[in-house]
Amino acid sequence: MKTLVIGGNGFIGTNLVDALLESGHDVCVFDRYPSRYRGPLPDVSYIAGDFANHGEVAEAVRGVDRVFHLAYTTLPQTSNDDPVYDVRSNVVDTLQLLQSCRDADVSKVIFVSSGGTVYGIPERIPIAEDHPTEPICSYGISKLTIEKYLSLFQRLWGLDYVVARLSNPYGEQQNPYSKQGAIGVFLGNVAQGQPITIWGDGEVVRDYVYIKDAVKALVLAAEYEPGPRQPRIFNVGYGRGYSLNQIVEEIKNVVDMPVQINYTPARPVDVPVNVLDISRAERELEWKPQVNLHMGLSATWKWIKTIGKGSDRLVEHKS
Ligand SMILES: NC(=O)c1ccc[n+]([C@@H]2O[C@H](COP(=O)([O-])OP(=O)(O)OC[C@H]3O[C@@H](n4cnc5c(N)ncnc54)[C@H](O)[C@@H]3O)[C@@H](O)[C@H]2O)c1
Image 1 (tube, helix red, strand yellow):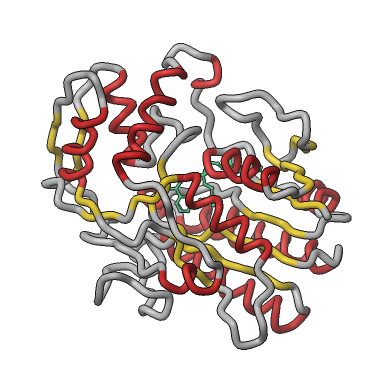
Image 2 (tube, rainbow, N blue to C red; image 1 turned 30 degrees about the vertical axis):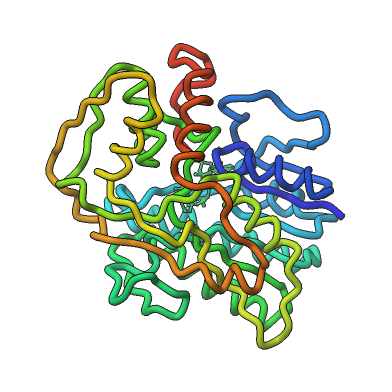
C-alpha cells in the first residue's frame, strides 16, 4: 500500500520518509523542491509538483492509501502579515486536497498541526488536547480550521484522519540558516562563530522534541486504526519544557566552540510558555520519546558540522 508524503523533501518530511521506509511503507514524495541536504532515495518515488495545482495533487493521490500533509506556506511569526494568503494557500488548497482524497478513496490523511500555536496562551501546563484553543496567530487559526475540516470530511464521507499537534521539533535536516527552529538556528549561529540572538529575556519555555522521536509518532499515527470513540487528535512533543536560557546552557555542554548571546526585544506572537501533555499519544499510539535534550543536541550538532554554509543545498528557497 502506498503512502504519499506531501512536503516530503522538507525537514520533517525527509525524516518521516526514512521512518516510513523502516516500517515497510511504499513511499512517494510530492514536493515542489528537492531535498536541501540529500539526493533522492532509490526506494522512494518522487513527484515534482505544486500543492496549489489541484490537478497535480488529484493525480498524485490516485492509488494512494495514506496521505501525509506537510506542505505549508506560512510560519507562525509571519502569518499575521497576510491572513488572506494564509487561508487561501493553506486552508483552501487543503480543502482541494481533501476532496481529491475523498474522490480517490484514500483511506487516511495525517495532518501535521501545531501544538505550539493552536492553544494560544495556555490556561494550564502541560497542555492536553482538550485545552481551549485560542490561537494568537493566523497560522494557528488556519491549522485549527484544517483540523475541523478533517473532522467534517470524516463525518460526511468517511475519510479517516489523524492530527499530530507537533511541538518544536529539532534535529538533522532542519535548516540552521533559516528563521524557524530555535535549536537549529542557535547551533547554526555557533557553527558560524556568530552570537545567538534571543528575543526577550530567554525565559520563554518550549517543548522541544527530537525529530526522530517525532516522526515515529507520525508513522504510528498512520498505522493507528481508531474505533468510533477513540481520539484522532494527538499532541506530539517531549512533554517537558525548557527555557531558551536552559537550551543555551545545554548547547554550551555540547559544542566545542565559544557561545555568545545577544538579547533583543520579545516578539508579539510568542506565547510565554508551551509544554504539551503527551499522555494521550503515549496511551493510544503506544509511543514515547526516547531522546533527551543532551542526546538530541549532540546528534544535531554533529550533523550541522557536516553540512557547511557554502553548499548549494543551503541556497535559500521559500517554503
Ligand atoms: N518545523 C516545525 O517547527 C513545525 C512545528 C509544528 C508543525 N510543523 C508543520 O509541519 C509541516 C512540515 O514542516 P517542516 O518544518 O518540515 O517545513 P519545511 O519547510 O522544512 O518543509 C515543507 C516542505 O513542503 C514543501 N512545500 C511547501 N509548499 C509547497 C507547495 N505549495 N507545493 C509543494 N510542496 C510544497 C517545501 O518545498 C518543503 O520541502 C508544516 O505543515 C509545518 O507547519 C512544523
